[in-house]
Image (cartoon, rainbow, N blue to C red; front, side):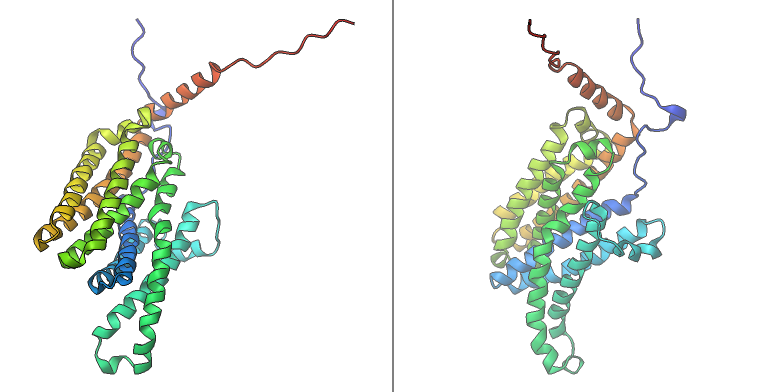
Length: 323
C-alpha cells in the first residue's frame, strides 16, 4: 500500500513564502476601511441635515486615517523611507496606487476635519475670514473624501489578491465585496454610537447594506473556492470569521430593532465595529495559513493540470486530397 501523501518542501520551508507582514497590516486593513466608511457617513449626514453624523464621520475619518498611516509605515522595513513610495505612480501596482489614494484621501479628510473642529476653537484663534472660508472648504473636502472612499475601502483587497498567497489570490472576486461591506458597516457603527436614534437613519441604512455585502462576500470566501476556502473555515481564521458573522448579524438586527433606544443603537454600533475587526483579521490570518501549508499550493496546481490534460484533443492535420 502506498502511504498517504505528505506535503513537504525542501528543508521544511513553505513552497510559497508567507507574507512578512505583521498584525500591523491587519489593523491597517481595518482602520482604512473605517476611514472610508466614516467619510461616507459624513457625506450622508451633511446631505440629509444631520450634523451629529457629519461631525462624527469627519473626525473619525481623519483619526482612522492617521492610525492607518501609522500601521502601514510601522510595518515597513525602513519606515523613514515611506516618502519614496510617492516618487512614482505605477497603475499596475496596487501598493503604488494605494499610496496615492491614501495621500489624496488624507488631504481631503484633513480639510473637512479642520473645518469641523474650527468652531470649537476660541474666537481669537480663528480670524473672521477663516470662519467664512472653512465651511465651504470643509464641504468640498468632505465630498472629495467620500468620492475616494470606495477606492480606499477596496484597494487593500486588490493588494492581497495580487500576491501569490493561495487563499488570497483565489478569492480575488470576493475580497473587494467583503472589504467594501465591512467599511460601510464600520462607518455605520460610528454613526449609531454618535447620533441619537432619531438622527441615525442614514447609519441604519448603511448598516443593512454593509452587513449584506460583508456576509455575502465572506460566505463566498469561505465556501466557493474549494480547497482554498479551507483555511478560512478552520483554526483561528475560522473562529474570527464566525465571530464576525455573529457580530455583524447582531449589529444590524440591533440597528433595525433599536430605532428608539440609544443604548441598543450604541451596542449595535460597537458590535458592527467589532465585527469589522474580526473579519479583517480573519481574512488576513486565513491567507497566512494557506501560504504555510504546501498542500494549498500543490493540490490546486495538480487540479489545474488535470483539467487541462483532460480537455478536448487538438485536431490533427487534414488528410491530403487525392490528385
